[in-house]
Image 1 (tube, rainbow, N blue to C red):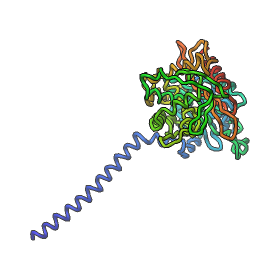
Image 2 (image 1 turned 90 degrees about the vertical axis):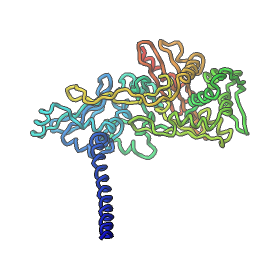
Image 3 (image 1 turned 180 degrees about the vertical axis):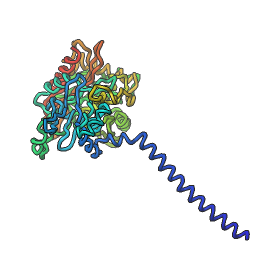
Image 4 (image 1 turned 180 degrees about the horizontal axis):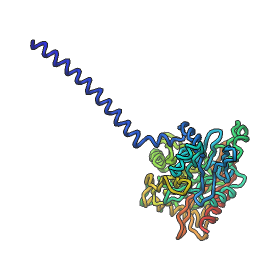
Length: 475
């Protein structure tokens, strides 16, 4: 009898364990369902990859996209027969920023698809529309894009391919995003085969997705690593530039063979002395530089809700002296996007703090009532106050007497670094770079990254573009 009771108790225990197991699984599913509905559901609905969003277009007229200063950048025109046509008054100038919504989607048309197909029109009006079969008006997306700055940047880039991207370091607001070659979003259907044909890069947003050798703009990172390894004596650095430096049968030259003579740490940066920075590169720890670059957003997704690419960097203690020298002056295997360099530059301007970049200020209904908004938020501290001050000093010197001197003596105070990056080993073509920022009392600080493809020196081709943008903004 006792044996039977023991078996019964044992079997009841097994049933209890199984019951509790399935109870906790059921409880976990319920908790996840609640979590998904309350926290994650809107994220999934808002995802630009959610094709079900387009079903809303059966009941809602796609809303407008406007600039920060009220210019319409995208709108839906409806004729008497109810036919809808998406119109882009900003045309080619805003093509990559605003994007398109026919033959797929790109740009803000893609990122804000849910917002544009959601209506917060007065609910009684929506009910009446549903009864009568009329469509409700979708919400309006109000961007941070500055209409005048965008036009100035677009015109300044001229006939060159490349990119210009501008941001407020203190807020993270993206004010300008220009990429060339471009396309006309108003004729996207008619031009589709041409702009999407093999060899065409018109749809490619160079500002956020471009992959370029950084050239001498990378000296920002090399200088920072040297400072970290020499925090108290970096200013005692001296080097005699003879125009070339050779190590292990690898020769690095200064731009067009220029001889800088004896240069300090600051002068090496301001005058963009390749031989001096190759020498600095040979003296620093490769693994430490690799770690520094990883902490400065290389090899990771950039913190922006927009199509963007990862920048690439790798250097180790096993790499040759030749690779080390090339890497430390911005050649080698390093690739960056203009957006990435803009974020790093903005952090330097903002005492080492990177604000999360964003392009949309808020969404409002047809009556102008705000239904959703974005606020500035901190993303990460990339540098210490002392490090950002040191780099600002170097970038100030580059403007005062170095390669960025075209920005000296303006109504604003500018800081910057140029770059002249070789496109490949098989051609003498170079991409011109400028990254920097400017300040003026009574204005928000402004950071910029400029790339001009197949042009020449950064000081000749990229700096003047930045100057035109700064002049427009501060004057």
